[in-house]
Structure formats: C-alpha cells, structure tokens
Picture (spheres, one colour):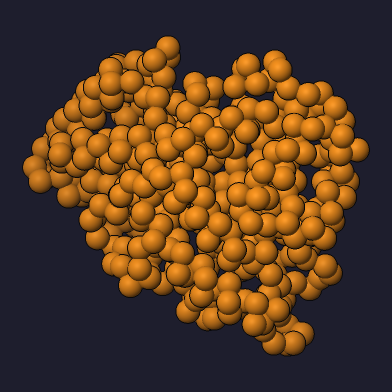
Length: 426
C-alpha cells in the first residue's frame, strides 16, 4: 500500500483528470455491475450523498433498521442535508429487516399527516450480522413496484459476501447460538456474490478502510445520472478533492489483495475461535459470530443481585435502573482493567477481528477473559449466587477499523494489542 501511494498519479479529481481515481471508479463499477462510481472520503459521506441524491423534496422519509448507521451514527445528516424523516424499525425476527417488516412500516398513502417512504436503506453487515440475499431481492422487487428507491450501506459488504452465512434462508432461526460461520474464498464466487447483492439496490456505498485495511476512503456506486448528480452534491459539501490518487491507489490494493485475495476468511475463522474461547470459559455471546465481529456479553457470570435491581419494588424502579447502569459501567471498567493487566487494549464488548492478529495476542486475550470471568464469579459468590445469573447485555461498540494491513486500531505483531474504540466509526 505504501508503495502504491508513492507511485500513484497526482492529478485533479475535481476535473476528473486523475487516472488512478478514474480507474478505481470504473473498476468498482464493473465489479458491482453498476454504470458508475464515485470516490468519497468516508462511509458517512457516501451514505449521505446517496440519500440526498435519491431524495428530491420534502415531505419524504427513509425506512431503515433502528440500529442502522444512517440513523444512529451519522450526526443526523439525513435530517440536516436531505430534510427527511428517518423511520427506524425493529426486525420482527430479531436479526434483519424482511419484506414483511417493510410492508408493515412503509408509508405509501397521500395522507397529509405522514411523510411518504421514498427510500429503503438497508445495511449489510449490521453489527456483524448478514442480511440474506433472498430478503434483499424480495425488498428490492417490492420497492421497485412501488416506485421506492433502495440504498445499501455496504461498508462491510466485503465481510458479508466472504461468508456463506449471507445466503442463509429467511426462515433461519436467528435467536439461537448456532454458529452461522462458513468460509468462502473463491475470487470468482466473491465477485458473483458482490454483483448479486449490488443488483438489488439503486445505489450502494462500500468502505475501503475497515476490514480491507486501506488508510481511508469509501466509494458510492449507481447509475450514470445518479453518479453525476452525486458528484455535484459532493462538491457542494466540500468533498471535492484534488490529488486523490493517494486515496485511490491503496484502495485498489485493498480490494484486490485483501478482498479478492481471500484474506477475509482468516478473520472470520479467528473471530469464531475467539467466540469459542469466551463461551468455553463460561461467558455468553450477545449474538452468534457470523463474520469478523465477536459480541461478548460482559454480564456473563455476574449475579442477578449485582445487576437486576430495578425489579425489587415498583417504587424503586428509577433507582434500580440507575444502579443497573452503574453495574454495567463497573463491569466495563473491570473488563478494561483485565485487558491492561495483559497489555491488551479493550474498551467494550464488541471485538472486531482482522487477519493479521498474531497468536500471542490471542493467547493474551484468553488471559484477559480468564481474569475477567474469574472476578465476575467471585462477585456472584459474594452475592450468594454461585451460578452467575446476570443478564445485562453489554452492547458496547468497538472500533470498526479491523485493519488488515496494520494501519488501524486492531491487533498486530508490532503493537500486540486489541484496540477497540467505544464509538462506531464509518
């Protein structure tokens, strides 16, 4: 990647003159079977440009998962840039949005009290969970029949289509702890999967930095008129850059070597192994491991007396909720301290894994787990609950930059640390 940056072209992308950037955009458009593509600085910029381009004039609304990045992690950009209502819905299967969810919540009437649904925005993966292709196709077909545009926040689509869990049936029971992880490393199959998902959406954004390991950058794909309009809007919000070759060159390396080179498979295998390390020690997972994310329930092993204070008396509910939050904060602090004792930097229950994590770091993580869970059992015994029935779900976000080339906040041989931020990054 460093070599590609040193040798790249340095022409002006605002005028469409940089050969490396133009090549990246045409290359990604070809990979996704769309007409055009546009390099952007971040996933947030890509999503916001897509929605602003699709949306014309209020009143209008965007239908999305209640956990989605565009709703929770983009500073209210849809409201400020597009003047749109974002309607977050909770999947009825507890895993991903289906067509039945969309039909239940989409606004199709001309009722003056409502904001009509103009865009359906999905995200794959979302919290490391895959949305099956058949559900994307069903939603896409229905949306087209209603004149509704579709967008995919595909920042981690590379991860989704590198795992066969992306093709799980819509009837799959997502509420059990069965592993959904299967590795698929054929480059031709990866391209086929990418094109199959891309065909479901009028636009999609893809991130180069997260699991792929490029220093920065995302890309937005869509039709030729869509990209033309998005390019105009990009300039209006300060996204027009000059020497973009230094961004495009490492992005090309990331796609070719990390994604098409099949390297994401290693991170998926390691994530499953780390999940097994936690559960074999008596810990619980907040959700099954499907791709490269491991969600640890930091309440594992803590007693109900230590956590569930809100149910003692009805009049003590408010005080109980405050105590429960204090308990979760205490658990998180114990987890962080256990990491520091073994030179492993953690700051939440979500671990984002990349393929360059060394074996020594994994072993140190195991020691962190031992220290934390042993301490939690001692707390349980002190409360007279040797079985550790705590149920608090530590839904704490870590850094999404699982960097495959040692540029991000992951574990690498030099740092020998797991570095997880507390806020989701696009």
